[in-house]
Length: 288
Image (cartoon, rainbow, N blue to C red):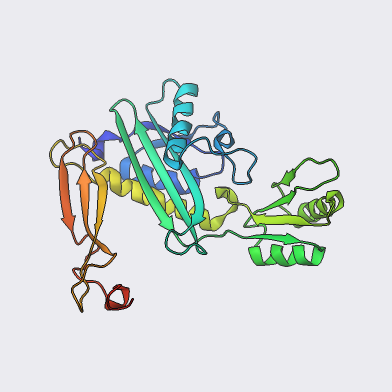
């Protein structure tokens, strides 16, 4: 398959309600010629919310796929759909450091293609604080960078014994009114403020989604040499890059194993990060 012509001038749906098309569409349109429109009939909040009202129904990858399947259901003539799903979790090696993982998926049901990419970033804007006074609240607001970065207000212990969540303040006056309201309904005088992780209200995350779209483009342009199918991706990562001082294996990547999803052709790529040895500072033997 020639990826230059495979997607050229074909229509694709982008499943988002949070303006991800601003960063995803130009990348795929310019390089692939896709004619992308937003699947406005799909309410992506049905598949989980960062504010916690709705739990994500499945894994990150499968949730992105569920969004696409919903789009195909509501747009039966569509052949291509794209969706992304983000998560914020502790870094596996440093639990106190937050890690943003963005997965983006493209499904072409005419050609039976399912191509995905992932982007991981330590550049995140995840903040949360429980405050007791308006002064503390405004200090949090200023540090967060409102209104460019949205704010979610929560009062879980209120007079009606019903959790309140508000996340649509876009102006100082609206936020001020919301803060007064939340302090008023809180039984213990506390409210919780947290950064809004929805893409359209989180510039740092939006940039990570843009970078995920670039990774998707690279994956699409990676073609199996055997059957010419796009999406020739890494199946396994082997660690063990030798230390430049003692030659002991380190935790750094030694090779990638690529596999075609269609014909299962495999190919190994040694030293994928462009270096044959690792710095002794990253060696468990030299720097225990």
